[in-house]
Length: 72
Image 1: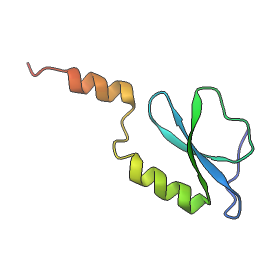
Image 2: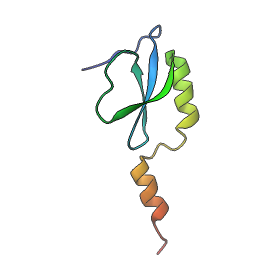
Image 3: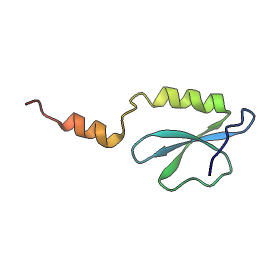
């Protein structure tokens, strides 16, 4: 199912277990593997929130793997 972003619609911010973020229309069922983070607003407000909190685009598992890697 394709969701079209509407500038006048209300959105909420979702995050998955890999700590990746997405905007989702309010009132739509949250897809499996995604969770509400408690931020809701316009598309611009939600995008600004994601820009503020999602500072490392790498999935959580990759960050953990790289942080645990020891130099040879």
